[in-house]
Image 1 (tube, helix red, strand yellow):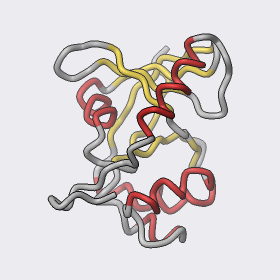
Image 2: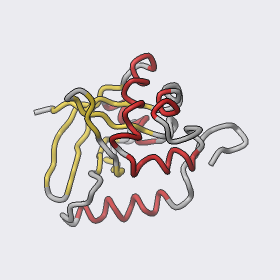
Image 3: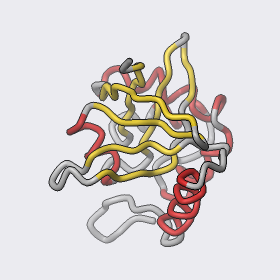
Image 4: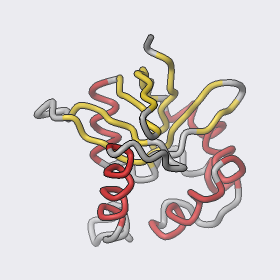
Length: 150
């Protein structure tokens, strides 16, 4: 959904779905999508959101389809977080990629994370589901490289 301001926003139901997924993780139920927890940039309060990490050339990445999303702003500010899947936790460093490096990683997203493509389409972040359309969205999507912290 795009507001009159031109800002891309997630669908209204996404926050509710995310809360259910994060809640199940807290109960120790392993979900297909891990939860990423990062400290809030203003309050330091831990915030969690489901993400879809994927590998390119042996390195893991996560994409924020909404550049203005709070979790992306928090991840950029903190530079670290924790990935949780069920009871398994991994402390990670989150390295924000510059726009010039994002296209190559975004090109792989529809191939490696096909279940995530629909959200990008609904938001209007990409014109279609092709790898080229995702690469062209490099200036509209935050991309973080995930590195082990321990």
